[in-house]
Picture 1 (cartoon, rainbow, N blue to C red):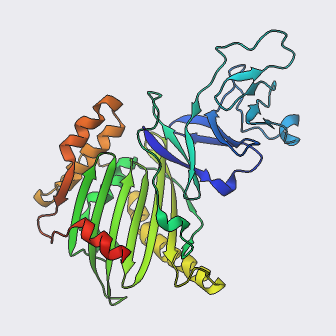
Picture 2 (spheres, rainbow, N blue to C red):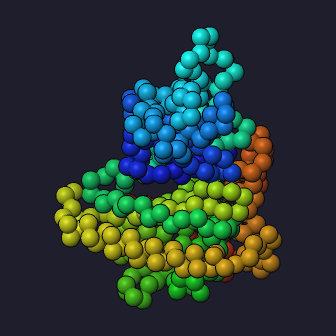
Length: 345
């Protein structure tokens, strides 16, 4: 069960989009009412993909979407937003009640389209993450960087949340303090250290909502920003990744120069993220980690992660094993709540 990142909301026009995530094919479209719909990708009739065709007549004429329903490009079977077939051309009888494909819960948030994926078919356990900065006129929202498919299990991306010791060698910013906190489906990291190039402290307050949606509040001196890193499994062992940054502006009416500064800042943040990509793209899977005594947070993070890859009835069991605050023995022990107050000041 996982919130998965989909294309940006701005990408979804009048035509459906074919997607592949979680080892499955999907059809994503916006109905005439504005409702976003995500269905299993293939028609029950003869297996045609509902969204990948480009040459058939009803696709070329942009006639697939009717109301909030979609027609198959092969024989024009029509599926409603719940995945039920509600019209079959040239059929004299009623539509079979069993002619139904799965419809997935979706939501528009943070300029993205997100889905809830649960192999057991249950409803969402929690909503998509909320970020007040995104709708604040003083903040300049970036455009998502589409970073493509990375050949790595998403668990190894989550390992970064516990990895205080890579911040110096990989990013050149050894932290002076570092801690993790777990609250059910939420995973937090608090860290900070002095940046010589800025002559100021970098402080970050980072959290995952579920296993694929990261947001990180960052403060360097008086400059405040939030990085968004979303990653969704494509197949077992590969993920598609997006990155974005929203940045606080001096006024509620940003100028072109302010927007350019946001783009430059987002590129600098992406350059730092690319240092991780450089490692991940060439490493072999770390099925087990030969962790040192001061790296117990790796095991805690992986225990937290297991709640999403086991029956949902077991989620509480894994949460109870890790819930609470966990520090790194050789570093200072800040209270994350005090940093958040400092960030919002």
